[in-house]
Each structure stands twice: as C-alpha cells, then as structure tokens.
Length: 140
Image (cartoon, rainbow, N blue to C red; front, side, top):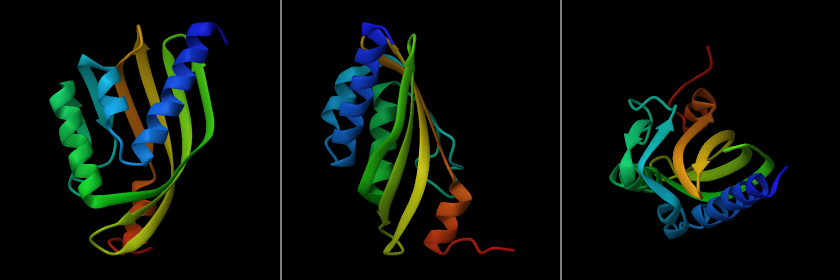
C-alpha cells in the first residue's frame, strides 16, 4: 500500500468513526461538489435508500438515516485501499427508532477518492435481515 492508499484508508476510518457518533462535519468536509452517494437499500423500505447527488443529496441521506436509526456500533472488520478506491467491511448495530429494536448487520462500503475528496460512495447491507430484525419481514 503506497502513501496515498494509506492516507485514503485512514481517512475512511476516521470519517466513519465520527459518523458512528453522529458527527457529520468530517464527512461533509471531504465531499466533492459532485459526489454520487448510493445506498443499495430499497427506498420503499429504507427512506435513505437510492442514489443521491451532491452535498445536498448527502445531507438528505444522513438526515433520513439518523431519523430512523441510532448507531451503537460501527466497527471496522477490514479496510483496504487500492489506487483511488477504499473498501471497508463494518459490523453495525443500531437502534431502529420506529420499532425500538436493535438491529445488527455487516455493511460493505466502497469509496472513490480523488485528491482527498470523496467522489462516490456505495453502501451494501443485508436489507432482508434488517427488515426481519425490525419485525417488518418474516421468514417463509
């Protein structure tokens, strides 16, 4: 891993540690003006799901996410960088505000960074598993 890759890896870890605590300024500080933010969660079940663009779109995403969930755990299990890409696997626990239930899942996050600015984010998690934990989906 070269110095730039190491710096990108460290950036993801520090920004997401602050994110877990609800401190969003470190995230907003690194956003490129034309950032593309993708959460693969279906928006009919997760209001924050879908694609958002620009700083305003990321602010909308975070407002929707934090109105529905309060993070109690957001721990890195593996974080790797190659070129301008940083990939992380995180163990997450959050209180689902509407149901009062705690949900646990692993999430994969892929960032693309250019000159220290986040140009794209893609997040993936087990949406069916989370819906089951929230009591909104039952096993067949």
